[in-house]
Amino acid sequence: MSVDYIIVGSGLAGLMLCEQLRARDKSFVVVSNTSQQASIVASGLYNPVVLKRFNMAWNANLHVPVALSAYAQIESLLGIKIDDQRPIYRIFNSIEEQNNWFLACDKPKLQQFLVPKAIENDNSNVLAPYGFGEVKFTGRVDTKLLLDSYRNHLKSKDLYREETFDYSVLELNHEVNYKKITAKKLIFAEGFGLKKNPFFNTLPLEGTKGELLVVHAPDLKLNVILKSSVFVIPIGYDNYLVGSTYAWNDYSNTPTESAKNELLEKLQKVISCSYEVVQQRAGIRPTVVDRRPLVGQHEIHKNLYVMNGLGSRGVLIAPSIAKDLIAHIEDDIALTKEIDINRFKS
Image 1 (cartoon, rainbow, N blue to C red):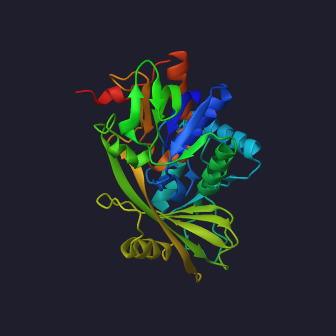
Image 2 (cartoon, helix red, strand yellow; image 1 turned 90 degrees about the vertical axis):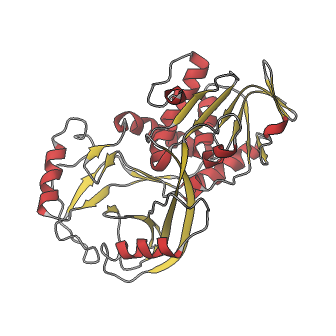
Image 3 (cartoon, one colour; image 1 turned 60 degrees about the horizontal axis):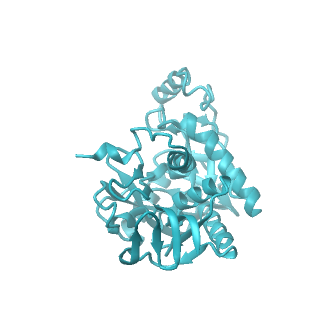
């Protein structure tokens, strides 16, 4: 098989790279063992605002339109519904937070995302005596449905190899040869698996374990996303995602009792109705010390590239970052210094 690109990894980063290549009519094949769980267990939330300090998330004004367009295109391609657009209601904990909200609403970059009023709480099962602030252009992508459906789509076209990538058989000359596949370029999008990659494992990728719960709360009747010390996200049938945690010293995908207790303790400060925990999920987020993605070309092997380190806002930024990398490769458009791996050159 001869293709333009080999993509290693089929998480959110790999999928968005496929979409960019498909839009340019470039041929590709994906090699993945689906061992990394970050995209599958992620809440799928996209949110342009840092709601702890009422600041705009990094380049959110640029990422939001690209992301919304990308997920709409995938819905059309696969004939599925994955993007559940609904507002976030940030719970105010004091009059002071209400005042800070109105100050934030006056910031030019935030005006398109924040509704300049305090919304009264009319849900007796939600603990919000000071009301809410509403964030627009927010929602949740069903990442599991997205990735499962996209992988099945690739398999139906014989563009997917379900296996652990074997670096030892990779041959690098003017082309890339991997087993029976010849390609012009190869992009690694392996998530935390990059730590085992001999070409890019010196990059400062860190792993942050995240856990979330699925709870069944038939009396809650919530049709918005709540944000306090945790997110409470409706996912249908009176079920809600509650998350998430951050742990820096545990690199397993195994759910823990301590994380469960932490989330439940926080949830009980947000809702007052009864609920049942029906599921717990865990995965390792690929994060970077400066909280910016790792994107770029190998210093020696010029046909090898990397896209990684999307972190907790991967759903929001992945479409833009994939677009930037493919434009860099195909159109020779320089990557911004913020995401270029050359920023870590000694």
